[in-house]
Length: 238
Image 1 (tube, rainbow, N blue to C red):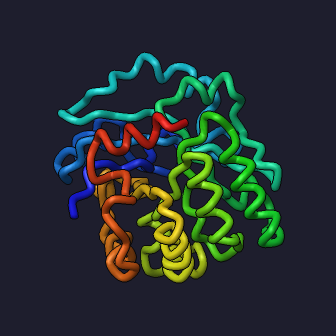
Image 2 (cartoon, helix red, strand yellow):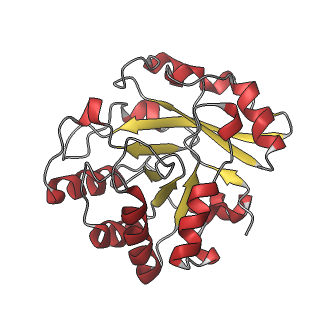
């Protein structure tokens, strides 16, 4: 199975990543990708860029180094009501929008029901395409409810390669990813693979994610990133 799109990566603009747009694009091309999404952390993440950064993305060429770029954001889910830290005016200008829970923005973990509600409410935002790394055991989720809602609302659930890296700070990610995939398979919910690269060499690195997909015997038909057109069809659903 060949994955040609990476829907989650960061540049220097996110504050704790290490490469420029062009460096990320060049390495992504060398790693066999056809599309790379650069999804900078939204402003409430400590150290990230101001919302003006996102307003000005229109000036950046979407073809660089022989690869297509999708320029967008990883917005922060701020509470159990799915509130995001960028407004609709900004989000609708993005090529792609991920909504994720991060501790510095969401605060302490809430109940499984509240965390699940936070994701589902975020999915209801008309500009959200992807739920990012819903695998973190620090923020427990009802994966059956999540998979059913994502199917209904046309949102992709992410298998995050960085989450699965041994020694990572997120908890029980492999177990949780396998449970999520079980329900995605059951309800025919589409998924996407994101490297969550914060350095160029990781652009298009899905080594840990592919191991989990193999263990889950997950069908290729439900993976958005196996072709450019397939991914774009999924994004157009929103």
